[in-house]
Length: 385
Image 1 (cartoon, rainbow, N blue to C red):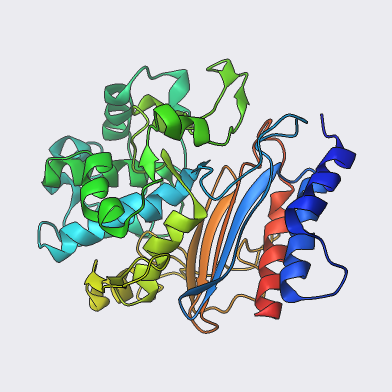
Image 2 (cartoon, rainbow, N blue to C red; image 1 turned 180 degrees about the vertical axis):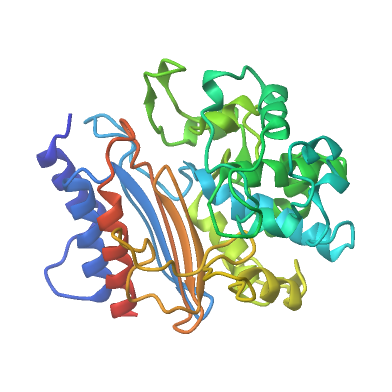
């Protein structure tokens, strides 16, 4: 499957390979090693410093096949759980700013059926910082047929632990946040984010359920031999999001590194935005500075040690597994990862943004080598810049 000679030859042409050592070449070489070692067939990497891109490359191919198309700047990746912070979280931020909801409101105020079986005290804040008491994960595809079944299952379950007692990262929290956006705004997550985030920022390659030419641009993820029995391309990898019609608070968004930079640039620039890839820049405001600050800082006033911000994570505690942002990332950061092999991390102290998109789940999800590759990549970037 992996014709390494073909891949290496293609990369030498693609990168106009030079033997001298520069920061850019070091990163180029490291990305090539990722393909050569089967970590992923291709990737997009964008690095920005002082809110300006200093490295923006697409490398590799859509798959490991010899006739696979090359990844380009317009190739669209299934960004998986980055949906939580690129769609769901900013939608909640906009509704919060517009005083259409408060993060301390109970979820049952907007979704009364959610209050069943001890869940009546859960707030929007609990969902955002993943200490709601909901289970980490449910294999909905085994028992559910559609969106209504998924929501009914969440509404009817009880608590898995006491609300507010600890952090348990859960897709269920984000699914419910997406439903709150729909209930409050009168629009589904796709339409609300398109109108209030993606179109204003010029994120023309960011969407749920891509069709037509956009679907052709999508990089394939996994061959689902367990449930859907087909190769997934332009169709959400996450099973729960698929049951939700491809539009869910936990997953479903497709995007590019350049589009994600436009969004992150607004957060880094205190809520202000402009299109950094065009001339005649004009500043606009996406969020208030106070809102950005509120949602991207670690919540510390809890009765346990916490690394979560609102929607976002900050540098996780060291465990037996390596931290995905790399050990050199400062504690003053925020970011998130996606199951398909995607991530966004911003180091506030070092003022370095790293957007890294891959389809490491091609051809299947058993490949977990990105768990070592990604922190090494981040460490290398932070040591060079």
